Length: 273
Image (cartoon, rainbow, N blue to C red):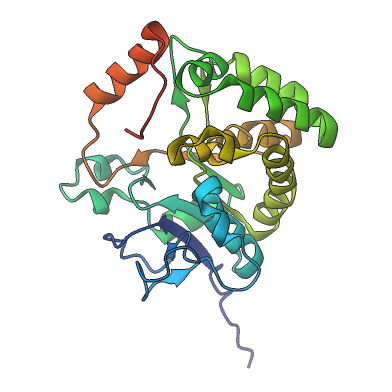
């Protein structure tokens, strides 16, 4: 008489980067993750912090949610790993999900994620479209073009095979942004191994402190969002896309007017929308 055992489901950990207490998804694959915990340990004392083990938690003022990404890279060994934000999540692709009254019920769950990852080992947020702007011109109008220019110089020196895809993205009108994705542990660690040396060198060449403003000093987190596509394209990695869900209503009027003021009025962003 023979017996068989079912193959255990792959383990999935998706960090939810937050800097303050906030409602979290109920699905057990989500790990509330206090980013910048080394700077403000008292804010989320009962939450997992990004300041244990190998970490860059004390650089959160420059790297934003990337201190959480770094922590997951160095300290989490589940089969799949990912990152989302407390006010921005990957949503379910199921048709009915978009009509759920409770926005947290629109967030993708572990069963759907595992089904997607069975076909490809990378899940990303759907592209953001700028329509009347390229990725480069939008950034140049809203922040500082020198940050993209210096990043290209770093790529040319450290990862020249990725420059072609970077240049193509700069001329595109859409991109996968937000630093939101779920990947197999191998792909996740591979991406971080590639990403962080580029960002550390960018920080060395373009000191964030020079901007003299906490909002502007976080540029490394913003620039990093535009590095995902060159990495995906250059390595020819397939991926699945999921919609983006915000637990709070988005003020599209404010976002739209800010976008237009930046493009036509020369008013750079001084806060998040």
